[in-house]
Length: 107
Image (cartoon, rainbow, N blue to C red):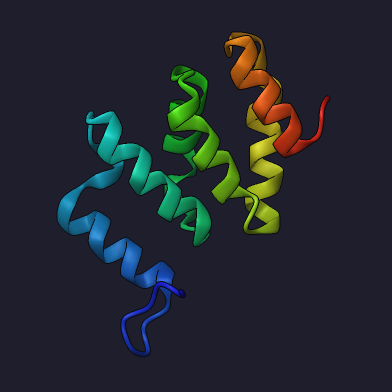
């Protein structure tokens, strides 16, 4: 299902939501991971720095795998996912690395 509000595209809606509720700046990992999934899936580029920070700072598979999967929804996101994974991979647990190797293609 596309994320839109009538004629407004997803990018505009996500920007408005983030301006109102500051999701990108939250310290709550549960809320942040769900927000980053939406941002990644819909190409909300203002969240890219936070996505990079989160994926290199958090190694829990339950958080990182869905974000990487969402990044793969756009060509720009897929490139970002592979770039981040190349840096973050050594810090991930072996099971997380294995899951991401399968998702992104082993390095």
